[in-house]
Image (spheres, rainbow, N blue to C red):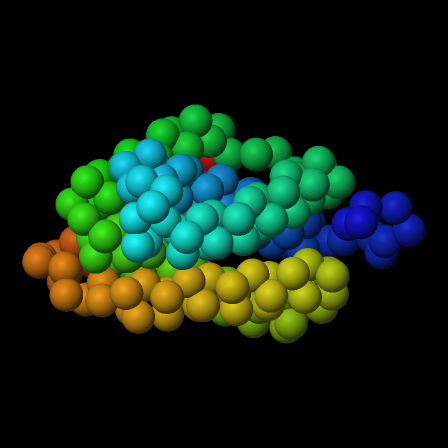
Length: 185
């Protein structure tokens, strides 16, 4: 699907851009699946929020599978911090779910706000550099999915979580740090 065969030769800068995008998004989508896995470990199947979390988790699985494929097809080294991000994602999901449904949705709002911005930056970079139109299309679609998740969290009263501003800021800062570090490692 994303095979490097019959593609134009990339400059070292273009290759670096693609590698960073794919490495970060691969790790991020795995982390997202873990967040929802952690939340689903707390909420019961008959809880009001279960179905919505399951829907978002299933979309994240599609994203994860796409980047699993890209990491192989584009021969990109995955992050060496992969095990850390998987555990951190699970613990973030578990921890926010233990605080309640609104806190779980606050986690979604914070994470997806950062990821929406991050994907928008990638759209700009890929558009400007005209490196990989297929990847550009994928990133645009995933950005829309993530923004939809953000809106779902808002619609489920995430902002009514006690300490929302603090919780949201802490999660956003952790996401920004994870993105920055994962680009290199």
